[in-house]
Image 1 (cartoon, rainbow, N blue to C red):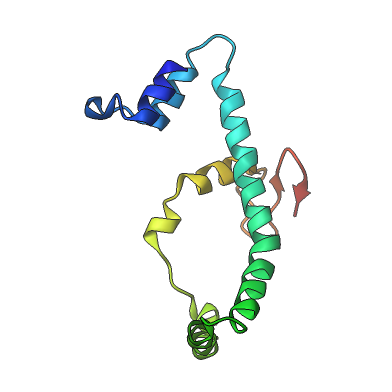
Image 2 (tube, rainbow, N blue to C red):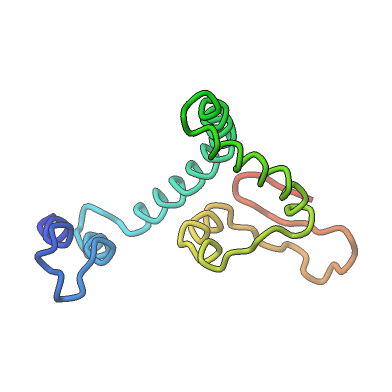
Length: 137
């Protein structure tokens, strides 16, 4: 615990220690298993995605609507005009960002849903996969 506090407070700034490396040192403690930490991080990444998917659009729409009734209405009008002009971008492939695509969050999200091929020699349109939580076909 001292390592986390020291890394956060900047005491270990010159040694290259960070909060993530301090958290990795916690896995050496006997009462915390690394598999439990990984599992919790996987669940948090899925929870973050679900909450973002369900709430972010509604919250941003409410904020945009509210902004029209404040002194910042020109900013909301510019954003709405950009939104209308840029409406077809998702249909054309969107804007891929290497920075967002390389987030560690997506690795934990992927590991939460471990999919394995049951029949790799099957080359038809039918693919059978096995997931510990459900089965798809």
